[in-house]
Length: 260
Picture 1 (tube, rainbow, N blue to C red):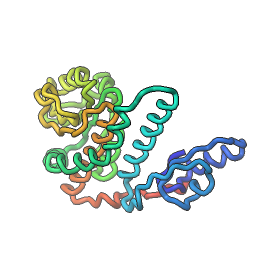
Picture 2 (picture 1 turned 30 degrees about the vertical axis):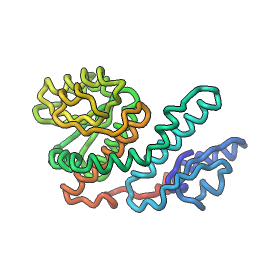
Picture 3 (picture 1 turned 180 degrees about the horizontal axis):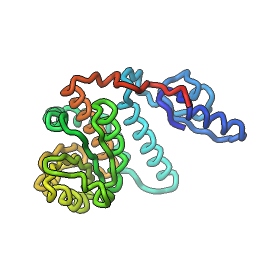
């Protein structure tokens, strides 16, 4: 069970059901210590994100992903798999995140000025980058009010590509392992005169095929999507500033959902 607040109604309802069914092994990831979820679930991993005052989840989302990646690494090691290189890189994540925020800030601001007046946007990613696209698109919707859809880039040609017209922006997330497929999907947009922003580790071919490139500091397959999320959150933040919207208190949503 995963909940930032530990009070989310639908998550607590699931916990109630599991307890009624006498489920012995329940596991929770939660940020607020002393919350209902943390007090009722014996096996709990705290996010240690401190208080997240803004309504949109940023650092708590990132920490949730980091926790599950850490668990996956540990489970693999317990099965006898060797993840020593990934484990070493994983421990550098705080440094990579700080580096990402510092090195990409100006590019994110420039991208925000180009996106702020658009009527709709797309975040597209292949493979493991797809999940990061969903989070980046959600942040754009939440704090800028621009309709933004996150999609697997392979699916884009099956209908949504019809929306693209001259100077419309699509933002692509990519790992280095998926560059070939990403460029193929980029070309489907650019040949319709759409504009491309790519968020990825450094790659010359991505640079050539993109109108804008935001470079991530780690080329690691499992870490670069986490850093791409940070960039997506930054871009959404700067777009909200361009539009004069308070990103901490977007309309119509609340920090903790306590109703069905």
